[in-house]
Length: 250
Image 1 (cartoon, rainbow, N blue to C red):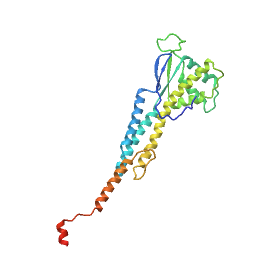
Image 2: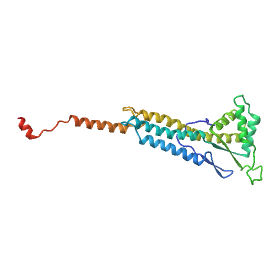
Image 3: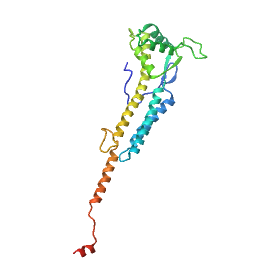
Image 4: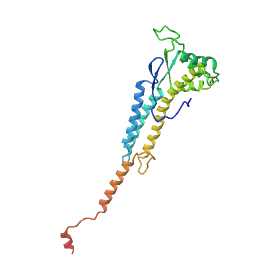
């Protein structure tokens, strides 16, 4: 099992096809996905297409405020987002049994375990279903990023012996947690990256300051130097005198 939190440059999948139930299961809502992706694009385009070199302090402040506002909207949505964790009956039974009877807890983890157990609740079939042993029935459990992280750290202490049915159930649960963790990591990494990028971008508002690997301010700097060079040439260019004036001087 890979580490829970990783840095992902490429956006991971946010849904997958559950073969047993033939359902497409989303870890985050479409609304959340579209909102976060639009903010990432908005921030990226704003920083690329705006610069404060040569502008007044007020104009620079306005650019910084606009970028920060978009970033805060992104972070606020990310902090309040919920992720959907899906379990079938066998996975549910394995996980609840693990939490209730197999794991050992400390004063720091026992309350977390209680909260997770309460979140899972009792297995009840969807209205209209009659087969209590159905393994194609899927239950959705909503949790925030912190709860998903806690769940991983709790069950990661569990060890299994051999390749039994329980072992495969354990692997599937870990995969599902890992699937969500990649999404959490991707958007969290974007939040951290843009926070740093905005600070670096603003620093290039000052003449002669550039960030390695970034084009921020380079075009504006070249244009500024070109304008200065042209103005300097005009200032030192000798004035022409008329032929008549030259003859009078002679």
